[in-house]
Image (cartoon, rainbow, N blue to C red; front, side):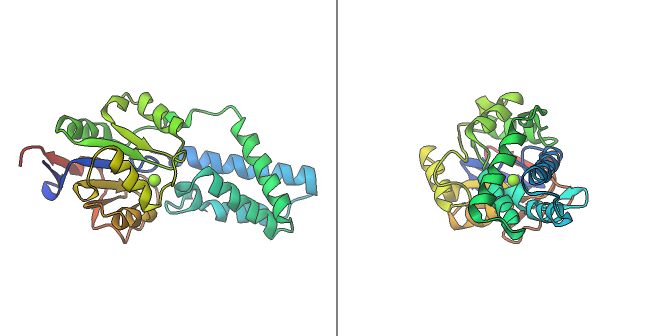
Length: 256
Ligand SMILES: [Mg+2]
């Protein structure tokens, strides 16, 4: 039995910790801003090539759909929180708002996303770990706490990220967008805990999205923690009983 500490105060007895990845362990905002711009530019180019001059609404609507605010990304927006397929559906919906049929919108969105996927870009898997996160991960593992990632990134994306930061051997398992059901279905938490022989009430879940935290509460997670340190615009997390602004504030008492 270990006790999780927030700013030195015990907040729960835990056997396991489930971490969200993007915006929680990974400093993802710069990569996601770049991805948003690439998808918007590809959409504008594709629209020009197939349907004529795009209205200025196209860029504006896509920016809104992805959750762009000036130079920052809405931490609860579609690009920050949802899977690739959800963002593709949002893009197809924007095309429909500008006059496409659903079939045309979906086909255009698919071409747009595929063209961006084929562009040579920096590796998103090498996004930096949040400051001090590696120290917390090592401390939890050394204290006998089982660790897992629960993310809407692909299985390969999660593995590459953990490998890149040389922490994959500290994690027992992960739940990705390739698993069914995907986050934020509470069943994703149940199945992951089941696979690791963990009781949800003896686990903490740490995430930066309201959807993560309400999922955790519905799944019966004992210690639900909202992480706010990963974004230019701090996320609003009303479902979080505990808020973490910096990884150095989290600690462990391995022998309470
Ligand atoms: Mg996240």
